Amino acid sequence: MKKEIIIWMLRIVASVILLQTLYFKFSGAEESVYIFSTLGIEPYGRIGSGIAELIAAILILIPKTTWIGALGAFGIMTGAILSHLFILGIVVKNDGGTLFALAVITLLCCLGLLYFNKNKLFNLLN
Image (cartoon, rainbow, N blue to C red; front, side):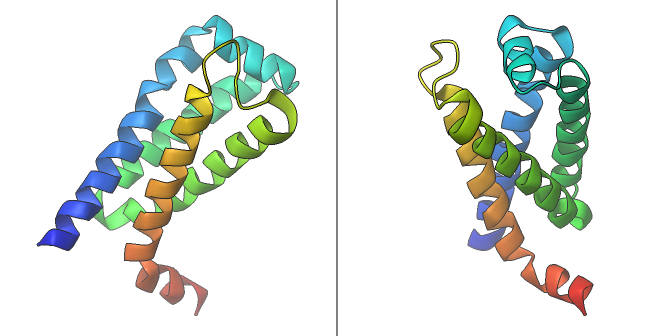
């Protein structure tokens, strides 16, 4: 029972973070445009990453596909964190590092979900 509560908490936190950033990506918010322009992939990278995050968030919320969504979001967040560390900086447009922190939290939630679904991952490799 405790395990199920933890899994659902990880699902909800990761999905809420992924979903709440979609507004900024899809509306062309200044910060989002700045980030993807700096990375040299505006607007296709912004829209593409938004679509990928939407798909990952939905998959995370469906129990049978949680591991697929977590794996996808893990990859997306790894890219986001590396972009912050090597190109953008931890603080972007005076956000106090909020976007970086949200990426790290999402990555950790996805790692937790992958840990709880490790049997499915190992079966995939066999």
